[in-house]
Image (cartoon, rainbow, N blue to C red):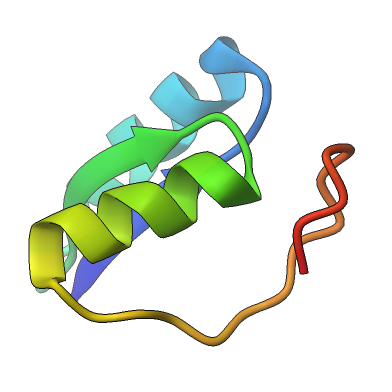
Length: 61
C-alpha cells in the first residue's frame, strides 16, 4: 500500500512516516502540509485526480 501522509505539523508527518514505514506492505511515498498540497502531489505523481475530504484550514474539499 502506498501512503501519502498529510498533516500541517512536520513533527507529526515525520513520526507517522516512521511508524508506517515499519509496517510490512506499507510504503510512505510522500508527505504534504495540507489538502491542496496533497492533491497536487497525487496528480503530479499519478496523473490522476483524487476524491477525498480534508478538514485542513485552507478549506480544500
